[in-house]
Image 1 (tube, rainbow, N blue to C red):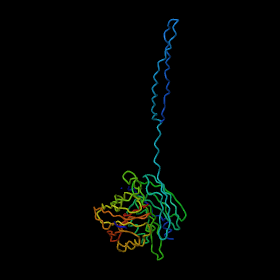
Image 2 (image 1 turned 180 degrees about the vertical axis):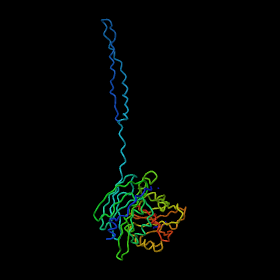
Image 3 (image 1 turned 90 degrees about the vertical axis):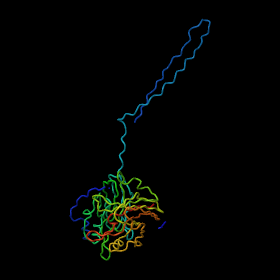
Image 4 (image 1 turned 60 degrees about the vertical axis):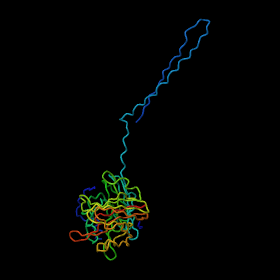
Length: 353
């Protein structure tokens, strides 16, 4: 042992200049009352005058049967309470080089969900809610500093609060079908050398589940010392996505056994690392760096080159906190450009507690 399918349709968005671009440029039960029958006492017939009357005791009466309860009228039946809508509170913050989210709930019943967002950091942040999916094209363009709109690339946007200034708050409702969703900030920033970084790469990405028929079960929040993960292809309109499908988002801190099954046509890796800033690591990977170089993100490659149709298990010791599972293998697009499997959808966060 080493230590170590919900495709809502996206709404088309126009090309009008957004604030981001400006920033970029700068029974009732009824009982019946019982009335017992009173029987009179029987007297003895008269005897001779000289005989003393003989007292005859009355025969005891049988107790009346208990009243039969009447059934509650059906018209008075109380309606079942409607299921309460879910809610998730999200707080954006900065910790050193990392940009993070604090959330109070990792899973809610599918349906209407109220999101409350607060920017507790010093920079502008946002939160977007959408199904887990392939974002590789958008991410690569934005890493190059190109001005592209998320809504042109993200499919099935469920809700968002964009460009919230420091200290400000916002809220919105989202209708979530059963499945896994990502909460993410896609704001850009500039390094001292002028290069572009994405808040998404600095840690502002959290996986949540909407449980219901055809999707995750409520047990997604039950802590355990095991986790089963399936590598699966996305379905239309997310057919380009390569996804991870875990059976839980919470594990017990300590030794956790991961059982990973590759249901895809390609080989994939399975790496776990603490949620944090991996922006420099991503640049290295896109430039051809070896995918075994995980020291910079404190990551551990639990499963390497998992072949199609195969299942492997690996046990790893986790400290309390938020962790990420991802595949950092790189492949080529048809145009020759490079993408990282993590950007194509093979990523999710989970909590060790």
